[in-house]
Each structure stands twice: as structure tokens, then as C-alpha cells.
Amino acid sequence: TLGAGAAVVPVNTRFKRNEVGYILARSGARVAFTVGEFLGMNYAATLAELRPQLPNLGLVVSFDGASNADYSLATFLRLGESVGEDELDTRIRGVRADDVCDVLFTSGTTGSPKGVLMTHAQTLRQFSDWCDMTGLAAGDRYVVVNPFFHMFGYKAGCLAALMKGATIFPKPVFDV
Image (cartoon, rainbow, N blue to C red; front, side, top):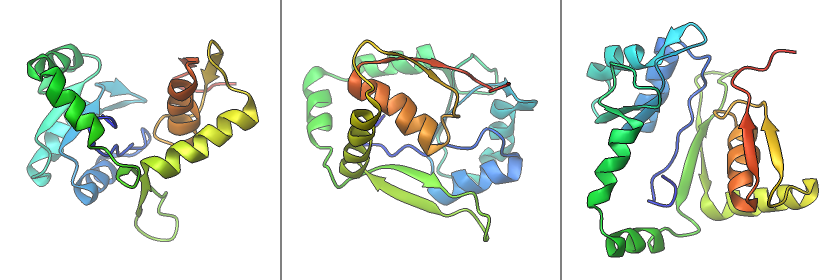
């Protein structure tokens, strides 16, 4: 997604219907990747209910085959088979350091959540330094307990592991 030049907007898995709707509307999200049931909420069904209020949301992709989605992840990925290597390379080369790579929303403790725009260069610099300070390296096996919607789980978890070649073992819900 980042290599294609799209901006990622992680959504808190503890959010309820109206909170999810607010983030998707405010960000202008065009594609949503989701699961069906998680933490007592059916996210795919919620997105189906919200769709009339989200004119930019053109596509819902389910990681687990939820019936309310437009595509399963496998089917969605097959759509990319029609994209040629030259077009793909051109798209990747078109991504610039100062392009927005993601929009992380604040918790909204002092009002409505606000989207924080982060660039590729800023993110890569910060988490390359983080990897160096923590010693994360290729071949490491890394348990990630922080949620992927949070900057720590998303960037110090997924992104850092991708940058260094480590293997992550996500823990969907932390329970001491």
C-alpha cells in the first residue's frame, strides 16, 4: 500500500460505529481493509451500514472472508495481476520522501480526533533510528503486543520488522 503511493489510515479496533465512521469520513478513505468479528464487534457489517455516509469508500476488503466485504484479501490481490511490471515500477519510483505515507488520528481527548500527516522520510528516519537503538536486526523473532492501529504497533512493530527483515509474531489481544 505504501509502495503504491497510498496513505494508510489505521483505525482503532476499540472504536464503535460512529467513531469508525468519523475517521473514515474525515480521512476520505477509498478502501477499507477489515475483519468480520473482533472484540465483540463485526467490523465488516459496521462498514456495510456506514457505506451510504461514506461516498469516498469504494471498496471493502476482508482479511477473513467476511460476507459483508466486496472482496476477500486473496481475490483483491488477484486484481493486481493485471498490473504490468513497468507500471508497478513507475508507481513505486513515483513515491517521494515528502509524500504522506499515513494519517494517524489522535485519541480526541481534547475534542474530535485529529489526523496527523506523516511522510515517508520522517517515518523511515524515525524507525530506522529506533531499530538501531533497540538492536532489532534481520532474523530476529519479535512478539508485537501493541495494536497495529497505534503508532508503536504499526511502525515500531510491522514497519520496523519489514525494514530490518525480522519476523513478527502479533498478539491480537494482550492478556497478562
